[in-house]
Length: 140
Picture 1 (cartoon, rainbow, N blue to C red):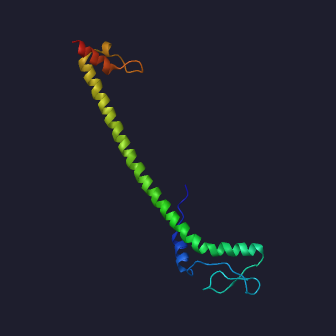
Picture 2 (picture 1 turned 180 degrees about the vertical axis):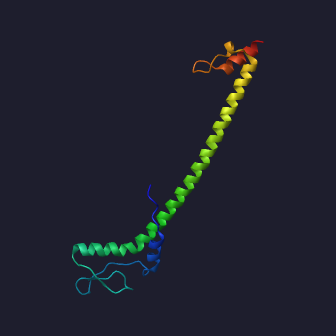
Picture 3 (picture 1 turned 180 degrees about the horizontal axis):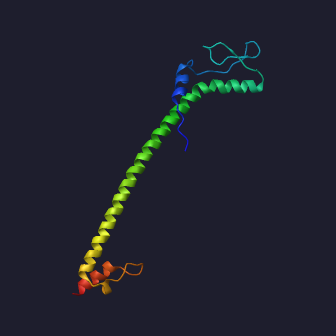
């Protein structure tokens, strides 16, 4: 399993960037310059179709990255919460199994104290030694 991505450097870059939202604009700018934020100087990018797509991507990243960081935080918290619940459920399940095994042990001892082995028989899908011991006791 790979290590979780360290989000701290991404957060620092996000917090250091000019506030958004950013826009991708190219009207009334010299060719090959695209404005990403009214607060920033234009950047040199190709003004062809791909350059405009790139500019829109870059501009959207200003709001997309913080949203993605928040979503990662939310999901990491949820995963940690589910892991804790799973751990607790595993402990409770183990305790239930121990209690069941203890109850079965005591039921076997009680059945043995009530009825001889040939009356009780073995545990199987077609035989219940506890019911056999109870039937035997009721006939006494």
